[in-house]
Length: 72
Image 1 (cartoon, one colour):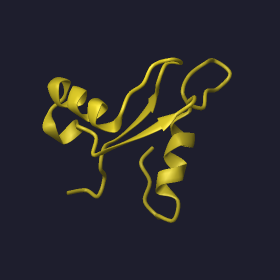
Image 2: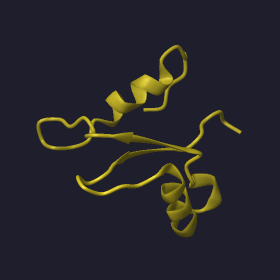
Image 3: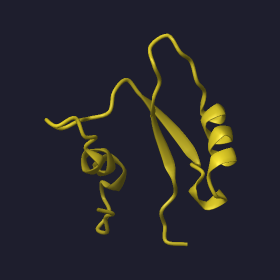
């Protein structure tokens, strides 16, 4: 409705394996339907600031490039 679609950004522990469908299936059991991710992207690590917090704004930039409106 608003043009935003949930996407999961996942870091898998070393030595573990996980596929996109497993993440989506797990989310379906824990989240309401509108919050279940439509896609999953895997990362080696997420960007973090000096205090160890995840830099969400930095993650969003990749997906909002080329759009006037942004989510903060």
